[in-house]
Length: 227
Image (cartoon, rainbow, N blue to C red; front, side, top):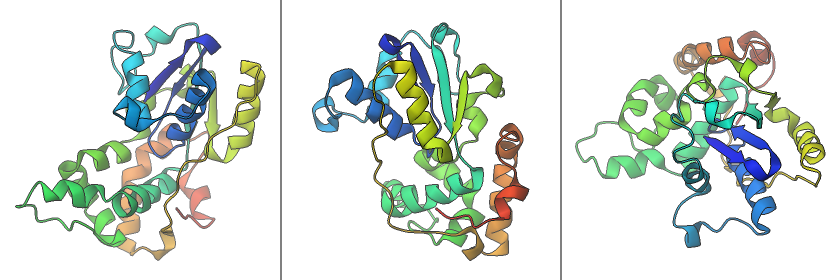
């Protein structure tokens, strides 16, 4: 997910489940003086900003950032395990992505509303069968590329206040992150079976390697991990 806010001299490269929608909604309100209206546009806010980049950025995933030269470029990252847990509570339970996709595939053998253990043990199969699950669980490098040094600023989701303060100073006007609707379901890493936990650690290993300056599985597992 890439968005350019040329009038502010800023560009954003987002990762699913890392506050991307909140950032886009907040910039849209700054640019247009009103909240984004999905119904009148005929699509979500990600599509709106993607269309604005047509012909300017040759590749979105992994990103080609040459078309954003001269803009202050930032991204937001999140603990990889927390991000994966959030995919289950939000995309599987709240949005029912798997159930909706499998309604169109009557011969599918996967559980349409899998328990968390089932989902993570069979993550490869769910990624192969459901495009939205694959998109939301793709590695960070798919969205950010292999080198975070290309970014002028990298914020962690835990630094939302610092993000707002820095953007406020850069834009010359108040920048407030809009609250994104959150899932009511909660899931803890410790609630999962050893097999499911092992599958999550295997899947997130490349993410921890890319984000090593910010997160590590060792430090993450020393505190409760919930989504």
